[in-house]
Image (cartoon, rainbow, N blue to C red):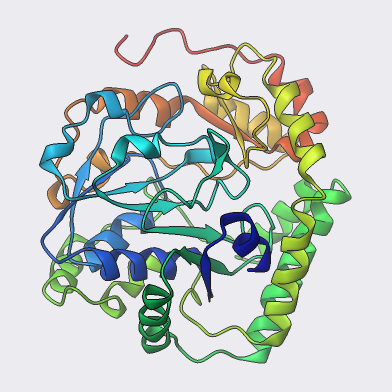
Length: 374
């Protein structure tokens, strides 16, 4: 949290997860019934946080340059608030949303600047994740400008926290350390096999989180309220509202302190991946951004994922399908869903910290044969 406070110059609230921070920010600044503009490409649970806050999700058109909101094609007069995604660390055009309630999801963009200004400082709130760049396995930070807002958000957080346990914290830290060790020692492939045998990977058939529309309708009758939406929001982080003890907080601080030390290595990976013909165009806009992942746009994405795994490289952070196809009954649709469908089908996010392992495969990949409307 200290790192983020220093970077943003804002008051910071420690959280067990980014997810809880997003809900707190949406509830604090938005009123139930307001219309919230959001990207069609993001983690499934984000949609349910918006619904839990009592807001109407308005799905934006997507820019195929970066996978974020295509501001030029948005009617801002039709919405009350905006939630940015800053996908893989590529920045949304935050200044374009001036005058609207702006909540910045900075989970992927902890180290990204826009015009020399850190993301997370443009809107009413910036919500960071300690499980992304730091790799701490859990933890979030909510950064706000006003001390009065911080105090109110602290009270709201404490009302929603559930009981923690030392055993759960130790397990979380041990799992994160094992994951980091597997990456460093190039043991990703056997680690994946072991996790699957032990049933530690949640099954996925199409959607990452089953929509369960009838149950969701019942939860919507209780809005604004977060607990009824726990079955959807917890997904792969079942303790997203649980208090974290000293062990977990110590580990989060230790991992966060590594982020600036890893900057040069991350940047070097970004710059090498930017040389590939499949790199998303927006990556080339500024090669000084230490992205969380470098998005490539490739012809046969699923085959590429399988080939990377055979080389000991795991691919995550895929958000497919877009919200228009995932939950059309619970959203206002995008005016043009084709770019989001195209992006979700072709994007391959690559960890720039381990570029050398993936390049032998990535150099053989080809761009899609047709564009978003091809």
